[in-house]
Length: 318
Image (cartoon, rainbow, N blue to C red):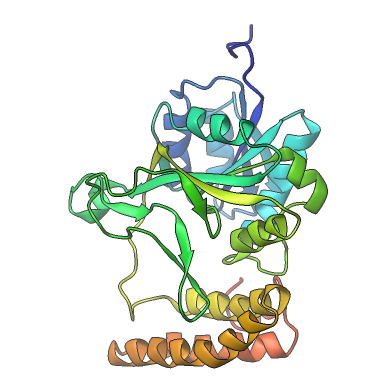
């Protein structure tokens, strides 16, 4: 017997899993307790090499489990889930990082906000805190309270690392909805498709939101929806080579696709200053591998590498 309440549209909740049983199982346990009941939780095992995918199947039989035989990245993994969700009758699709911990009533505000603005809203995200054990036990430390574009044409989170004292309680339009918690309008998915595989990981959610915006759909921040992100943020200068490679290869992909006229000129003039500052921070921290990876990413962009191309050669995919 369905526990869905009358009028609740069916939501597909997608988690992409890769060799991370601890994170995914914790997230799934919190999803068991949510108050919005008309959902299908979909775990996409993105080519795990350990036995974690089978462990999850055994422990969470109520969940839909799909396996990709190879690692298709955040983009490909989510696209597998999106395709299944739409075919199974889901009205909208929620992309949810597998290293998150949800609160019981997190989903209702997102659905209500989207359903009230179906003709103008492409995606909506919520307030995302750091999981307290990752920040010394402190609660309500913000990871993301919406997004904005910076002077160098990259993006940043409102409120990052701030204690929440009520300064981000207004629902508003934002630059893009964070892919960590991102409810996608099913009508817009039908018009523009899923995430672009050109990115593999990073910048893909901002690209989707920009594609939606280009046909008239905004991205929104809804503070009444609250979850926790269970990861340790890298200090500036301590980022991994893979992160730097993908961030900066993909930044150029995004810029070519979406920056035109004045925005293109601003990117050409300002972004090199940002790159120089990042290299300075990485070098000061002794993180020369990340500096090298940053430049490799830019070089590979100009070589025409997209998606998984070049990742094995650079040692990022086994």
